[in-house]
Image (cartoon, rainbow, N blue to C red; front, side, top):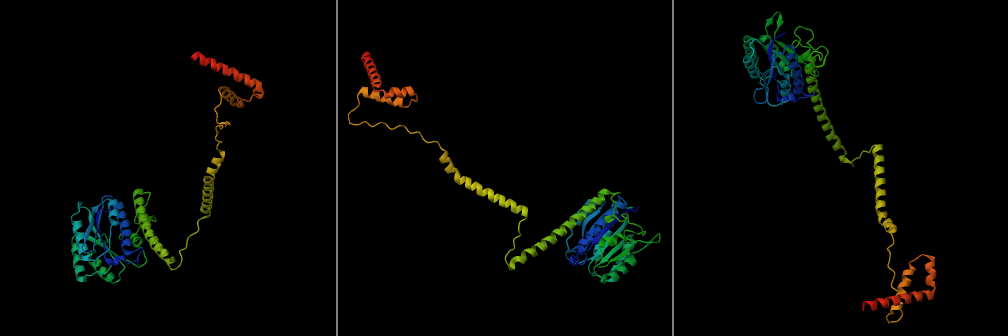
Length: 358
């Protein structure tokens, strides 16, 4: 197993916004870097991978050499396009980063992704290639999106290349428009120097899930998140277009599903019934209330003179007897003589009580 330290140099210039590679050039490079970092760390767990950007006003090392694939994948999500490509300075910074690697037994390699026009002369590139070859730095170049760079990159790779066991240490990969950068990289000598399978066979991302399930899962999740993000952006763009369409005429309202329509009808019917019940409740309550018992009106007495004691006693007796329901009591009340006798007895008893008190 090859023990290597690899710096990935990414072109993140303004030209990388172009959409001739799906979904755009920069995102296509990011997907290819995911596969590349996974392959490098799978071949040997002691391999170190770092990457830097070569545009956006200055060359910037985003991630130093590390065997931690999670850190690399996380850093690759923060790429932003801008500025112009500076290939020469990017390769020089990459060579300087490899020089300060922790494990000096690691072979040195730079993989450069170039997707915009190279603004340097052939003489500068040849001088840089000889310097890199002198320090035993191998360079692989992935060229895409700009045919003007192909001849210049061929000259550069030819001068930086050296033979080791009848094998080229540096390679040039030209990806044509419409191809996937990641797929082209998997089948190229950069990841497949022996011409055999690069380790993944027909498995996605070139990683066999039976050998390294965690790595395969991380790569799959990364790709799914990116696809979901792209799909969300596409849906938002289409949604904005759809909302602008009905502006010329009346807004069209979608009919609710049959199940929802039935539920709405039932709710409206229940609401109407509840309103009827609330309106009828006071009426039914007033009709079901028990009649208020009224006190019998006092009997009017003809004349202005006050009643005697005997008359008062007789009146009170009649009023008390009117409330009785016994037939015998009714018959007794109809007998006027008996009533007079009872009243007289009561009057005599009342006089005796008054005399005793005196």
